[in-house]
Length: 123
Picture (cartoon, rainbow, N blue to C red):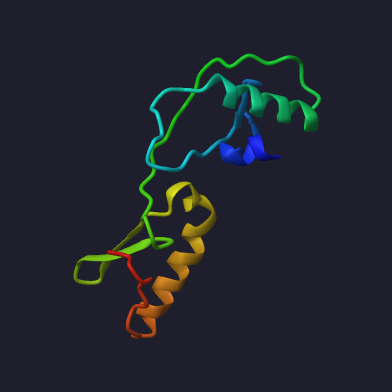
């Protein structure tokens, strides 16, 4: 659905102990992103949530917006910030998906005393 792709919408829901739902989410990328919430995005997420969950009509009580570091060319960045201490970042909104596998790869390379394979253009 192009309207979902346009805003990077992923339909997710998680319940809280007091019965509220945390719904999400969307990711906008590019150079001309505005810092303001878009009602269109909220409505698309709600529309899709109602397709998969049988829940009463919902209203949004609070919103959360994150700003993520994203490298313009590489999938992520690796920087040795002091001896044997590495910073791995720049995943954009993909950190939850990629961070564990990338961390495992970086650690394995360090333990094997291999030279660290840093993605091209990561600095």
